[in-house]
Length: 503
Ligand code: NAI
Ligand code: MG
Image (cartoon, rainbow, N blue to C red; front, top):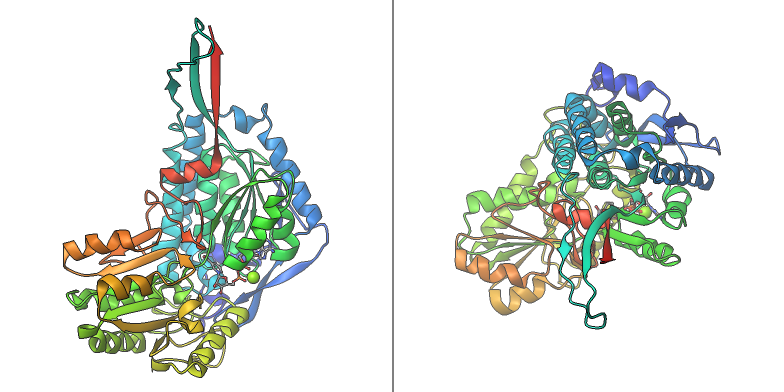
């Protein structure tokens, strides 16, 4: 077998981790699940099993939540830790991620299929960065002093103030498309705010969350503050989402499961934030610099094999440049070097799983039956693993499944428009989603007129899929509730207490 496909391509550290038994983390101890059941972890480049992980049960979730509740107790080491020391701890976690960046990138590539080079400079680097960024907020969750003027208690004065307090025990359920980064986006702010956590990684990609948890322990997090239970959605995720001991749930994944989480949390009105799907419009105006817009729009969809919630999956091209853009993106797609993620020359890896391969292939077939045509791609690549060709669909109706539904693969639907004000804005917003949007233009007035009319949580102009710890990310409409990153994320993990003292 080609050495870059399998475990042979891993460095010594990653190889050591892969060959060690995978456990779940409860109250500072690595243990087996109570059921004794495990599940298989596949290398998406080959379909071969590379490891096994524990299948967490309801009992494991109960034990993890109980540990997180104890660690959140008033008298716990964690609650007594000063904000400054919490910040230093978060800094140490960020530093440890960077120290192990090669190992983590290799594990991520093996588990998810993404190109190892990208995993290192994007996923792992951003994961470290959110811990460093959030370390700065531990000391800045300040309240305010209020001047009251109460009409019905004349003569009494008040000293009133607000105080921010951690929301409590947090259940965090994350997906497989950016496994370590989603773990970091969830954990860093929760820990910065002083919460305790039960984290459930996706069953497709549990490896880097487990390794990250080891590094977090090494950084000195008190026991029980972070618990990690691997397992499936129905058997591990659902009991966590509905657990009465959980104060808040943070979820990233499909809109479909997001709706189930809302129902599960409704029983006891848990606080909830959701980061869900998208079908984001990416818009190229006639005056765009095509030398940037063509590769920019191509990587907006093909980055991470299209498995990006913010992917620029609906490309709107103004009529004068339509032919040139479609031809340019098709050529870009054909030029992408496909291969196993662990091969450092790979630009487009496999999809994450057989399931995702089937789902994406189904959409490619649906595109054909709905009368659309292909500018490039449309099929499987190679004869092993979960690879699909980078694909550009044209001439699809706005109502077609491939235009309306999130495909979550390297499949672009490109369409032409002529009028910006009436036609484009209406069609771009014709989606149940509202996660992101892109604009490519050199005309600053056109850009400023368009930005406020797009119903999306992020608008990228002359760039796409740019993420930074300081920039809030989240969705309008069915793309979610709340924001991750930036100072806005602190609201997800803090309560506000108003204190009123009469004197
Ligand atoms: P999913 O939403 O089922 O999985 C995400 C996480 O939710 C996983 O950890 C999973 O175990 C958990 N989960 C599943 N069912 C659950 C339940 N009933 N209660 C609690 N947790 C549960 O996503 P899936 O099935 O892997 O992918 C399906 C589609 O979802 C993709 O094709 C894509 O369109 C979308 N998706 C969007 C993501 C995003 O970043 N917004 C990430 C992953 C998937
Ligand atoms: Mg699912």
